[in-house]
Amino acid sequence: MPDVAQAADDTRQGLIDQVKSHQKASSGFQKTWHAYCDAHGDGVYDPARHKVQFLEEFLKTAATKNADVKGSKRKRKEVTCSGSGSAASRSRSRARRRRRHGKGRRRAHGRRHRRDRRRRDHRGRRRRKLRRKRRSESSGSSEVSDLPSRATAIKGAERAVAAAAEELERLKANPDVAVDEPALQQKQKEEMKVALQALQSEAEADVQAQVQEAKDKLAQEKVSRMIEAEEKLDQAIAERLKEAEDKLRQEAQGRIDEAQKQAQARLEEIMADAKPKIEASWADQIKDLEAKAKAARAAANAFTKKE
Image 1: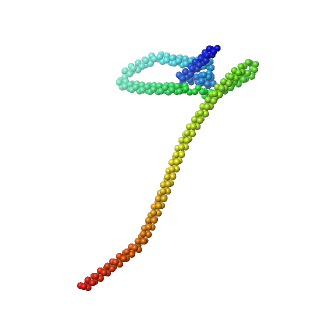
Image 2: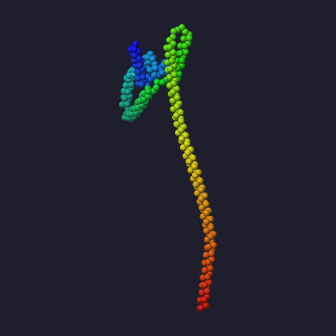
Image 3: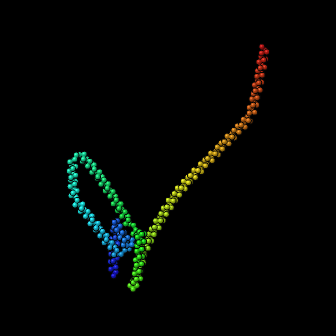
């Protein structure tokens, strides 16, 4: 018995590894697996959580689809090969027509040929780039968690509840039927556990996304508020500087006016004090001049009398 159980486990593990390796190798296989799980496996993408029968049926279905695709490709190739003779004859007729035409036509054809070749090269580069992009996407998507979507998990839970309700109704309708209640309860518990795990994982993902969105929004709001605060601070500083400059200008102008008034008053005071002195000095000088003039006249009179 242990050998049989070990063989069954090895078979199941081999099927699981086969499904995982095919998913990593081909994005189309991965899409087929997800679609099959959504349709028949309650949206559970992890192969380790499915039974051997489920995995075998999926691999048979995938092999059948692959064979159909290969057959269609082979048919298209045969059709292409069968039409190659007519293409060759057309190319020969075109060559004959080109030879009949002159050098100008050959040059024009050469230009068209080079242009078509550039276009083909461009299309080839685009196709290669697109293939590389798809490969990178497929390799990146293979590392994505095998958790089902929320809608699929809800549908799976609803199906499990409906199946349990049907089983309960059947038991109520046929109470005499012998039922393995522990096994049934265990099965229902496992189904509910799977559904609850899927819902829990989806809820955690939603919470993390909302938290990240809130963090990003707070960071953006913080940056915008900091910018707004800096602008307001610059504006307030400019206003204060302008007010201080106007105040200093007013104070300086007031001091200049006051100094001018004081200087004018001092000048008037000095002039008022100097005016009597100037007048007195002028009177003394006038008296001296009159005395000198009088002495000169007396000397002149005396001189005239002597003669």
